[in-house]
Length: 134
Image (tube, rainbow, N blue to C red; front, side):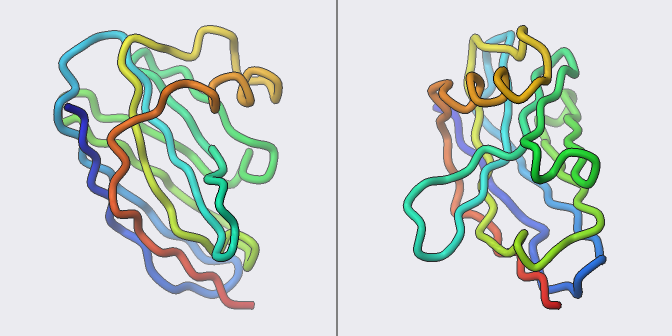
């Protein structure tokens, strides 16, 4: 069973940076992908903002492309999200998840990102809160 534990959230001012971490357990199959999602208070849907697979392929949504960078340390099954140039609209609860047997084979364009967001993501953690003040 895949399980994820997020950490690294906090409060920063607009333009600041944060680095989120996500430790995974139960990753016993290859290929696999991991992803970062966020949920804004009052909204039900979790938005998939960044995906990465164990071959290093990445995909980002348009709102974070160029500001956020995902990386994966396969040796310790840890996913990171470096968030730079943070904006107040980035304020949300951030979650990570994984999907076994799937990789990001279609490239990193917007349509492919939407496709990856429909994977059967699993192992949701408790989330880590990011608050960006103006």
